[in-house]
Length: 262
Image (cartoon, rainbow, N blue to C red):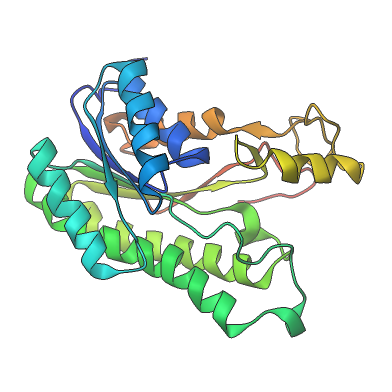
């Protein structure tokens, strides 16, 4: 299937590793030119070089802190200057240490809560606010917010609140921007194998919840989802072919056995 993404222009935040980097590869493979954003400048530049060399697309690295509005506005301005515009925003930046290892109420601090909400929830608001005028002006665009299945589970107070908040932000943006040709969706990954969480998955395997190959009874498909499989979902949602989907949450966690969502 041709997704119709050739020569589109995208920003991917949190793109130096993990799901964000996998999304960058998936979009570049479909012919998208990219600006990758993350806080770690050296790692980000290596990621951008890797994506550009593998897929032959234009890929720029723009170090960005989505917790700071000035940094976000500079990111969008630089994207427009370098790529000539922007069509797609994939919000993926987050603090992966927040809300882990699932502390109880007494150990859930204000500092941890606000630090995570500022980067992920308000950060997604900042990037969407900066990009939206460009998408509206051209009458087409896609915003995909990477959240997490913590929105549907109670393991972590901080992660549940942040992920539910991202879903609420998504629906508000979808209703406001939809008449202007801009679709907004949220993707909820579950436990996902990336190059950065090998130690965590090994710890989970040690508990017997999975084996070293990632096989588990905790998903309907019987294994841990790979980062590139989440990225495939994002690439479709970023494309013109996804026009019938907006404001909704797409779970990309391999299925939660026994639960019915409707």
